[in-house]
Length: 116
Image 1: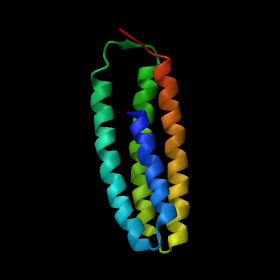
Image 2: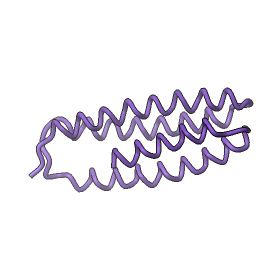
Image 3: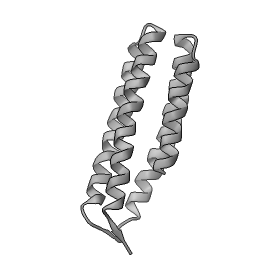
């Protein structure tokens, strides 16, 4: 799921690079929110089913998942406030960087867990 989220993160960044208007970015934001919402819902369900896993990584995963949800909300709010294409692109670059950091943390947390 982390790999899928990375692909979506990359797609969002690529859409920002290709956009020629704020309206296109608003449409892209709607698409991105829907995709990430579905993925993050799946992540939450998967984590709920990981009661057989041990180690501190599980709580780290849950914390990063919550951080990703917060980041998506912050990103949506910031995109609603953007008035120019440059501002929208700058926000997407900030957001995708923050998401990539959290996804990297999820990889590390997963590697520190033992699942039977």
